[in-house]
Amino acid sequence: MKTETSPSFLSYQTLVFLVVSALAIAFLAACETPTEAKGFTGISGDRIGDDYVYYPRYEVYYVPTRKEYVYYDSASNTWIRTTNPNQVWVKDISGTAYVKMDFHDAPEGHHHDIVRRYPQTWVPPEAVPGVPARTTNDDVREGKK
Image (cartoon, rainbow, N blue to C red; front, side, top):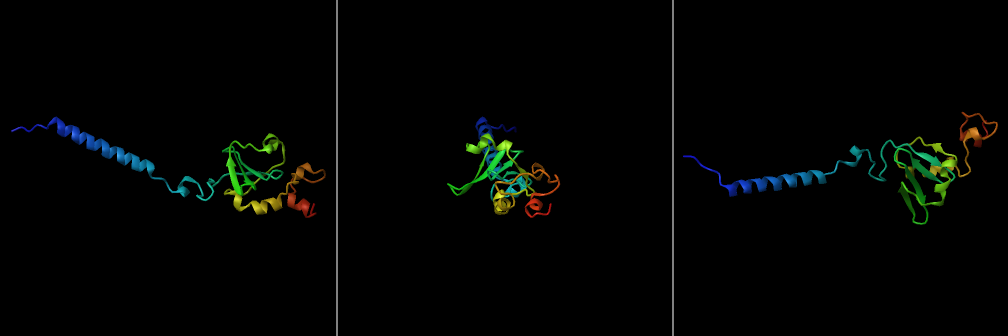
């Protein structure tokens, strides 16, 4: 005796399969990889390994790979991260002195030390007449060279 599958059973089975598959896909899409595995610190959104350039005159950090500016906004008491800053300094920041940072995490944790090390009046040593290019700014301030 031959049993045939009814068309309504096939459509019910197909419907259940599609619903379960859609739920599984939605669940997997909603699952997020831990932030450390993505390369983020999780605290400030910085990627581990970001290279920062610091512009002392404006106390602004720049991440060239992401074209992102990071700066402290004293009016709102927050750190701002943007690829499209609307600040006055945007027009001439590229023509000012900068220094590559040797940290690769959030600048917020280093800013207090960075501002003391590179004040707004800081200039690269090679821009100071009579100072050898390999001399660090710290050497110039401390009178070692």
